[in-house]
Image (tube, rainbow, N blue to C red; front, side):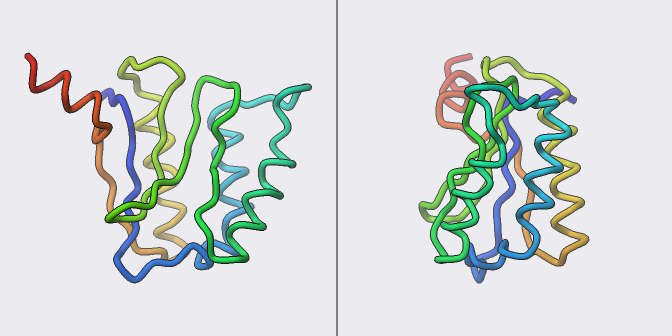
Amino acid sequence: MKAYSGHIVFSDKFNWKSLEKIYPEMFSLFIEEAKIIPGEMNIPEVVLYENMIDIKNNRKPEGYNREGKLRFYFVENEKKEMVIVRDKAIPNDEIRDVTEKISKFLTSKKIKHDVEWDKLYLIEMRRKKR
């Protein structure tokens, strides 16, 4: 089943520092699955370093919102979540596959979370208009 966006919603007791030990491995999993190749404007190591500074200080990290087909970023509002999207707003299998692999990884590391699909505001608005 294709999806516009994958959402990994962390439990209420979750804090960003919980990702400190596992984030580099999760980040590498995303880079590998998204087939991101390092280049001039696309330096995953620098992004990982910046994200780790935030995580160590229990702040919301950026994620990976650079060039490439797939991106992920973190949201902190009434809930804390990780959102995986594609550069173009078209549903596809890649988003579902990558979201499910990251979810399995988090489960194996005992990070409690739920997975939701297509919860971006604009996507919900499109569905209501139909």
